[in-house]
Image 1 (cartoon, chains in turn green, orange):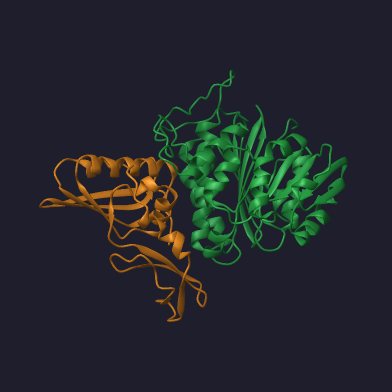
Image 2 (tube, one colour):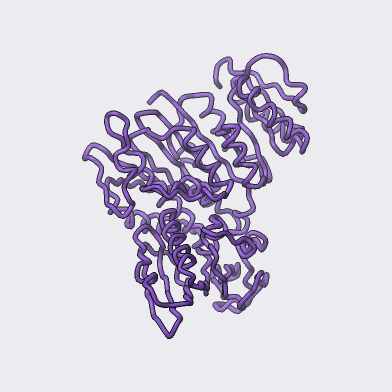
Length: 317
Length: 159
């Protein structure tokens, strides 16, 4: 439990709010719950957990209107159901939301607890937080773009060996491809923080310095498959993530970048390939991208489920 | 449905028409140059062998479709694979101004755990919910959401 931490739940659905309260009570000192925005008590909170769905249409509009105010009173974690991509674009782009948990079916208590603990504590890195200790894992290291094809093959083999359907294995490979490209081309910066390879066409091979290694970890517990890609640069910034995602989710004429270097679609491709997209940032030190694919049921179930998206920033190693 | 890491673009001309066949993964390494050489009035792009597209590959693909359009070449997509359908639903510009003839649809057989992509009749805008499993003779089910899977057919946007 985080000593003295105070959390507020804003949720019209009292059953859901009770379930959230039970989980939050394991992580914070004090939990208050209200069903209407108008009843939000005075004072600041370490965390505000609001439900996009449970508030209804009027409540949602009001929530968005009061979003900045809520953010000024505490870090906001939002539960969302199957909202359209345009609404997500607004949440990420206009409101700068960077913590969203999918609300589909029963509350995923483990996911909520991990998310809350990561928001409140500085300990954010590691795919192991999302999997039980018994999960199957595979760790690989990469320093050159020429190693990418081999890593993709290994990722696909891992997914299939874990019993995933072919299309789920494809999703994990898609996420792996984009994360690796980000780690090898976009992330590397020089001592002044200037990008080293971002301007290059991705046809040009790049190799990191001997002291620089990108670490890829795959995990599976039969219910979910995950991939983590950690780069040793920590150059990615929160607004970059939310703005790029918002631009892509709007699906406008500016969707595809024509500049030299990347197409500006990588984060969007990861988001679309996974059930839960997590980015952990430690400025100047490392960035970790985690993609988790819910492989329960069939592919059509994956398509219909809401997605989770979370960015965590820490200053501690 | 298997996945590859390399792509192959082959071109064959016949009269005023050209057949471009794309196989494998469309990535930054995929080269459409040969398919853009001057000559044809019509191009048919056969896509049944495309099993993966990454974010750089889709940009190259969009440029290819746009170049055909800019040159006044009528482009028809044939045998659009499941991976390509996903791209066109994610990136509206990926279809560009191309016409679509046939599409593959994903099916799953719970009985024998088989996954298949089955080709639909030309012009189809939905998929049968069930099909016969070629492996075990059981019932395969369409493994996607009709409204979203076929959404790209109603969404045509110049790249």
